[in-house]
Amino acid sequence: MANLKENLENIEKANKNFEKELSNFKNEFAEKAEVKERHFEKTVGALISKDQKILLVQRGNHPFRGTWTLPGGHIEEGESDEESIIREVKEETSLGFKPEYFGSYEECFEELGWFAYVSIFKGEFKGELDMKKVDPEEILDINWVSYAELKDLKVGFEHRKIIDEYFSS
Image (cartoon, rainbow, N blue to C red; front, side, top):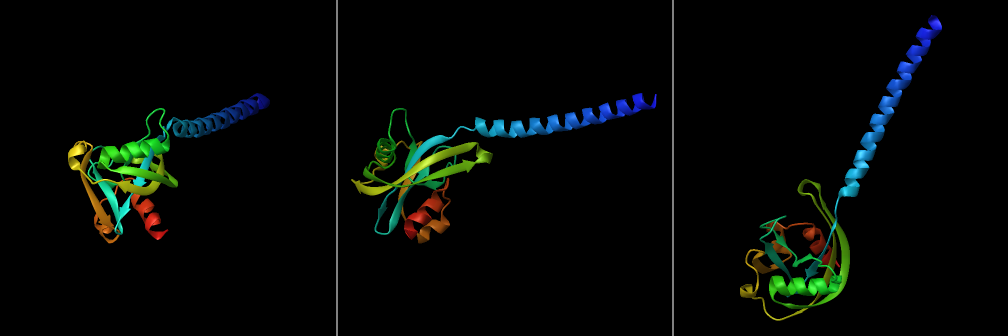
C-alpha cells in the first residue's frame, strides 16, 4: 500500500510539473506567434532642406493625425523605394524630388499597432509648394521648419530622431 501511495504522489507531482511546463511552453509560443503576426509596412520618407530648414507636412490621416512629419508614405506594389518617394513627395508637396538614400529605420508603436520599415532619402527638389495640388484630407499643412523650431512641434513617427541625425551629419 505504501508503494502505491508513493507512486500516486509521484504521478501527481509529474502531472503538476508537466502542466506547468506545458503552460510555460504555451505562453512562450503565444509570445512568438504574436511577434510573427505583426505586419511591418514598407514606407519611405524625404529629407528636403532649404536655407537650413527642413520641409515638414502636417498629417491629416492616422496614425499621428495632426503631427508634423517628413513627406512620404507607403510603397505601392511593383514600385521601388525611389519611385515611391518621388511619387509621395509630388503628391504631398507638389515638388519634384531627386532622391539619394540616407538610411533605413524601424518604427514600432505597439500601442497603435503600427510597425514599419522606412527608407529615408535626402535630395534636391524642383518647383514650388502648392497646397492647391495636395489632397487636403491627407495633408493639412506644409511648412519649412528650422531645427530650433522643431522643439515646439509635435513630430510623428520616429521623424524627430531622423531629423536630428540629418542635421548632425
